[in-house]
Image 1 (cartoon, rainbow, N blue to C red):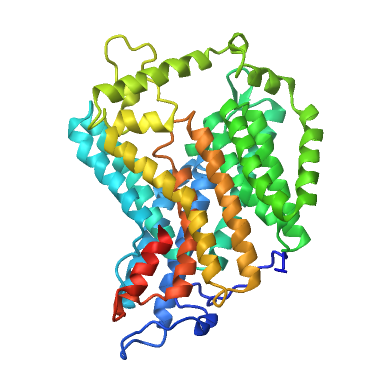
Image 2 (cartoon, rainbow, N blue to C red; image 1 turned 180 degrees about the horizontal axis):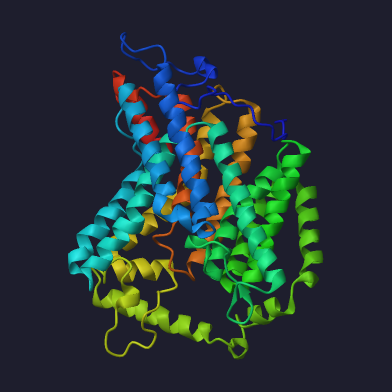
Length: 475
């Protein structure tokens, strides 16, 4: 019987580079040139570490946003600087090892393709400058950081540390929200708490969406055998995220939370039924502790008369107006980020977002943008299946502990994506960071296993067979 202990047996090199682990000696060899260097130079290792450290630094700044509390940091653009340093280190490190500038995956191609589409449709948008600004101010950064994640999340140990940072940061944001809600400050719309930091956490619905997307990873740490203290910290972070969702009184966040819990619970029930039952019981016991204002707002999901702000009716109108914009501009859309500025005759909810990611992209980027969005979401959803299929082939190149961890990890990622998607059906988040982080996390273990199975110098192989196997494994 497979050992169910979730200890982390790292079979890769300590510096987290692309060199396969020593267990690869059991796998079929891949031909390499006689002149190939036996290992990376120390300077190359340092650049690879710097690239990964820069990714951690950028992510920490993206989540914690210290400039919101210390305005003097705003002119320094610390997040951009850390990203540029990391990207430079990544590029120089890969070129020094005779590799291409970046790894390429179908997902990276589609992310870049969406950026190209934003620029290509800009001349046909209702405001060209606004569409270009959406690209230069937001989406180009997403592309660059996605490239960085694809090239640096190359070992289980790196993925683990990256996840730990995201969980801690989200727990901090959740704590700030719970603390503000308890003090009755930072509230909007009849008592809904908004994020204590700006960016993708400020809006109550966006705050809830991000908490739903990260909670499965906190649960993953709770269920792993990593030491009592770290498990308690992860449990505390999960509790703070749950508190933030309740404080936000987000209806979409609550529905997304329910779907996420169902996905994660189904996996947990198969592998640890006792823990699943205990979790369900704890959830039932916690329901009476929820504030009455939370239940009152949730009641408006089925009873429109309980919607005091009129947001439910406004959303219904926005869905119709978004679809109408798509029908009127089916090829080019109205321009990235421009639906809120689209004001044709008869529009009732002017100057507002679509509040549905599918209709947002359809209205703003047309049919081709919609196709790319569905492709990316589909690839993210299928990444877990691809990883599990590769695990069946990888018995000789991973330890049982790593296999167990990857199974739990893919379950957590699938649950996170399911919760995010439900929330995104009620939000305009096509150009926000959350999905692209989840996408990179979803494909990272697949790429790690491909590296273990087929090596990293596939360009030097005498035949196309390994490349064909890689394409099949990614499909």
